[in-house]
Amino acid sequence: MRVVVTGIRGGLGVSTISALLAQQLTTIGSVALVEASGSDSLDLLLGLEHVAGLRWAAIRSETPGSTNPGWNPDAGPDQVAGNTPRRDPDHADSVWSLPTWAGVDVLGGASPADLASDIGRDVLAALATRKTIVLDGGIGDFDIPGAQRIVVVGTDVVSVTKAREGLTGHGSILVVRRVRYAALSPLEISDVLGTPVVAVISDDQSLGRSVEAGLGPVPNRITRRSISRLAQYFLDLAGHE
Image (cartoon, rainbow, N blue to C red; front, side, top):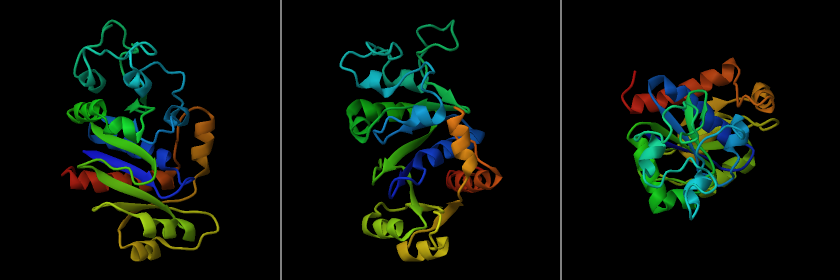
């Protein structure tokens, strides 16, 4: 299963929602969270900036492994997916593996162009053989064939107007992020856009505090319930109870 999360504008917490969804989906198996926005900020959000492991910069490099010894050009995409042995099997924290956060394998630093390349498609295909993939698509209409698509929309008029002008992709669903001092309801947004709202994320100050502490996003009970509802939507599509 592949899920792409995008936002209709900045400031709606697309990366946070992507990470929390990926974490929730670990209840049914291995999950990879792949940065697809080109912002190179996922490591910072999750507190992984000093954690060893493979990043897309090594894959993108003209001389793979020169800046990050985690990339083994002989193993190729299968290595990223964990389908081949590490070069150093005696060390569990070897840099030849992806860094992890809350049980989720994280591949940061990729852009839409990276994932559209031959090696990008190969890496995603290799990951999909063993893992559910959640792609943090950032702002815009990033999509990949065969993926389920989430569009994050705020409860403000600007968000809904942009979504009405630019919402694309058959089968997209909405996650509504409540914005302070914005009065549009999730039902109104769904009616205007003609797209179902699967989850509503309220303002959660605990997320910012936990990120500042280097823990990554740690939601409160209300946010956790909303993310669980979102994850269940995809589990139902995949036939999981």
